[in-house]
Image 1 (tube, rainbow, N blue to C red):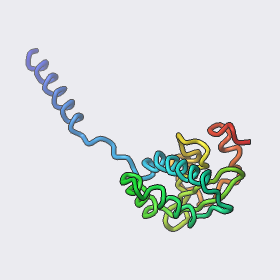
Image 2: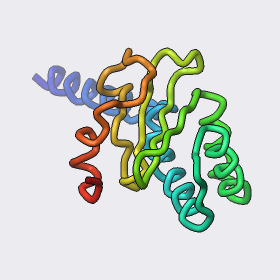
Image 3: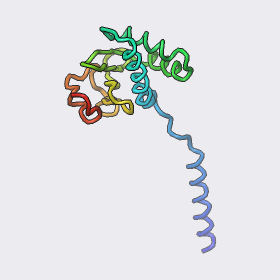
Image 4: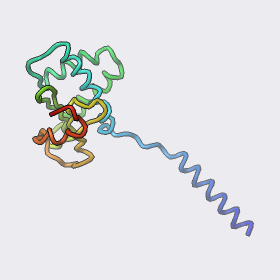
Length: 152
């Protein structure tokens, strides 16, 4: 009986120590962008409030991001990862804008953020529909109604 008890205790200790030694889940780049993109879009929105532009496209968006992140090391690092990892498209929508990240081949949509909720990306496509085509959301008002109630 003592041997069985000793085997159970040793087995429990070994399994617990193996679990404690296992590496924690590394966040993927996509998961990291779920936090970074809304943060970045709030910086861009603030810039646009101070310096209104008649048009916002991928090129002007990147220029603003370079200006806003340039002096912040962690922002500049994440900005570099964003532009190296994804293709990006930007569009103006009423009084806000949308940023869509796709794979570099521009075939698969990864996510689309509407710059109206600083806490989250409204359409995390890689989690919902992993092979979704790289296209802007056409029914965007319905998609953001819950997360951005001030948008009509």
